Length: 216
View 1 (cartoon, rainbow, N blue to C red):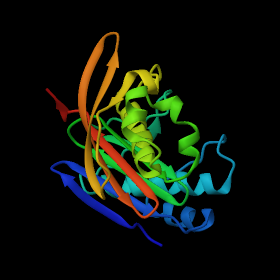
View 2: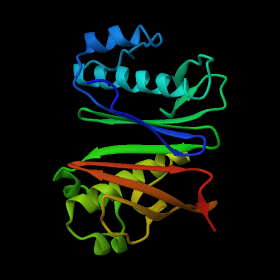
View 3: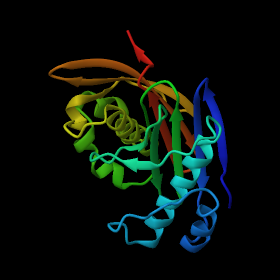
View 4: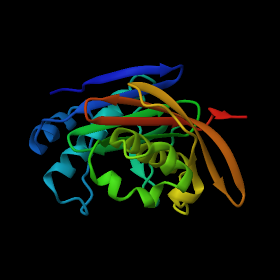
């Protein structure tokens, strides 16, 4: 199916989502109409190739809402995507058959999309501290929201030296279709509070945040 959604979530910020059913060949044909998209040699699985191409198609289509100027989309050494010689901030995520992209004109962004799966319960010690585990319990949706929220904060921070169950802190939150979480990035040199927004749709969780929406 084509691009599922591009929506304005606040002034200067767009969120794009795509439920992916196309093959790599179909996506490459569509990509040729949008921009030159190269697949890294490290990506060999067909599904991952499809997600890579689709995320770039979405990103370039969203960029056209802000500017007619074409900017190449590359990745930093940390893996973070960026538009070359551009003021626009971008974050990309994909999971099985789902792609999500967030672009902002104002500040750094982070986005993550996850499928609700039982494996998140088995790895919770890796990303939750003791207080978070007590607050969340064994609710798979809530665990997935927490995992995704911390992935989003990690992307927003943009550096690799964060330990999820120590440096990324979530305040208790209620599960709903739409919501927000008060969250902290805490390091020896930083203590910053943010709002992480989440959306739950069927078996998929989406989270995102903005660098300029920190809380006092």
